[in-house]
Amino acid sequence: MCYVFLQKYDLSNPNLQLVEKIDWVPQIGLSWAVSVDGISAPLVLLAGLVTTLSILAAWQVDRKPRLFYFLMLLLYAAQIGVFVAQDLLLFFLMWEIELIPVYLLVSIWGGQKRRYAATKFLLYTAAASIFILVAGLAMALYGGGAMTFDMAELGFKDYPLALELVLYAGLLIAFGVKLAIFPLHTWLPDAHGEASAPVSMILAGVLLKMGGYGLIRLNMGLLPDAHIYFAPILAILGVVNIIYGAFASFGQQNMKRRLAYSSVSHMGFVLLGIASFTDVGISGAMLQMLSHGLIAAVLFFLAGVTYDRTHTLALNEMGGIAQAMPKVFALFTAGAMASLALPGMSGFASEITVFIGVTSSDVYSQTFRVVTVFLASVGLILTPIYLLSMLRQVFYGDGSSCDITNILPNKSNEQAVCFGTSCVLPDESEYIDAKPREIFIAVSFLALIVAIGFYPQLATRIYDVKTVAVNSEVRQAYTEIAATRQNIYAETQADVSAKVASIFQ
Image 1 (cartoon, rainbow, N blue to C red):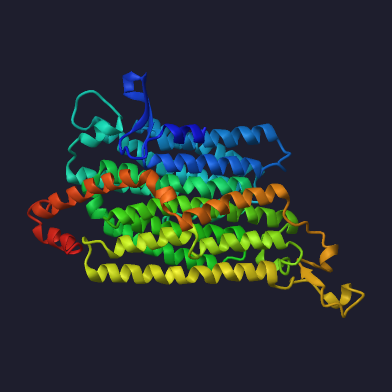
Image 2 (image 1 turned 30 degrees about the horizontal axis):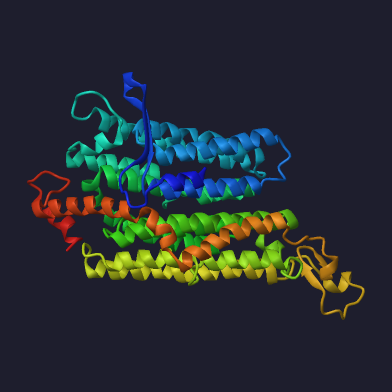
């Protein structure tokens, strides 16, 4: 399906393509309006790849397998619906449908605290989704005339700045929960900690990207004037995400929770790129979403592979399994190198692009740019610390309850390896190394990560034309606002407007 999709998609066309529009419920203005452009096309491909490989990774599911695969495909359909919907009410419906399979997948096939994690996810995302519905109704009803939720028509309406700001704030909350923006992120570590590996692959690889997509599609695309005022806030939140996620990840002793907080940190770069006011920055935000989708998916998959052997996610209960599982160790190390932005991998290409976008912005003051990049760099430096320490604990450390002198009859054998709670020779290990199916899944992700790292245009050419068009609309709005010094308050409060405008001087 993705191959046929690419064959019919014109990379040089920034407009909507493969358009299909049918009046569904005309009484309330709902239509089945779907299409793709440069923003949605790469995420559709990402969802297809991650879902396919996650289903392949779920070959061991033996509890209600039919229901499991049905829910996985329903989740995939809902995600595609979010990315291609051009009707805001249809977008909301797909956004809500996605909650059902995630809740069931976590609550049925999750860990010991699966119901708590699933319920927390449902409450967070369902409550935040209300803001999408309210914003959609407000935009559809504004200006009179026939009610419509068509995004193109909503984008042509001239909303008062005060209304735009309120709508933008509501959508930011809704998408911020999905993007795991601090402090709306707390559902993410719990969900990842309890979800099975295939579900975690989709949660980290695709689900988080729905939030970033919403910010670009709706907040920037439909409310460019409000974006001018909120962009500095997004930049600050991005820096907070990067630093907080890195520190929080370092403090986790559960492997999947550490990777979850790592995702929180990496999503900060998406916010920085969106807030940069530059073509390069927004391109970097898109590239970061694609790159993180691949990297996070392979890391959570390998975490599941490790759990299948060790039956634990506690880092202090693992150790020394590199000799027993050298292939898993090699694949996990490659994924970790990609996550810490090793040059030649997609993580480096995306994050350096965001940095260039922020530093080259002519909107923010030099002080603001320098401080932002410096603080983000601090978080970047922390990334290899928590990832390499995780590799050391899992693959090199000694098992916490292992005493080699009490187990091995030949105490002088230097080839003995200690892992988990057992001390045996490598060829006597009960831990089986990566199987061909597991190697294929991991290599499929890693090959794309390396390909994009060496040749970023493999991904950027899909969306660059569209992101430039979106940013040009925001830049035009900025020029108009800067000329009129328009502000969020009444004209009598010119001093407040001057303070807001000073951020961009």
